[in-house]
Length: 119
Image 1: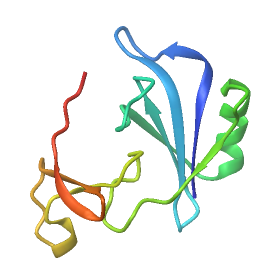
Image 2 (image 1 turned 135 degrees about the vertical axis):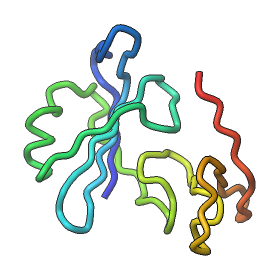
Image 3 (image 1 turned 180 degrees about the vertical axis):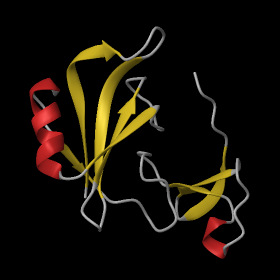
Image 4 (image 1 turned 30 degrees about the vertical axis):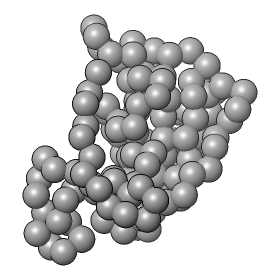
């Protein structure tokens, strides 16, 4: 399961970064990752944390999210990043020959090169 939410008030997590939205990803083993995004339209997370269970995460974050609440999002496709809002995977990961640092994204049913340009 994946869900994301925008924060009522973005918060400074260090001297240069502000978190605007979060996403949770519940693993099949029961743990939950929380991804934090430092741009309102970010595709990739900047930070993450791990929770043993969903209730603990909700206890920490439910009061911080805005009126839209938690928004359900599809689980990632096989071999894709768990923290991205669009289908992105490491090139070659699907064949067992990952080319770390090179990415692909799914556009109109075809995997094409993805150029990541952080702001």
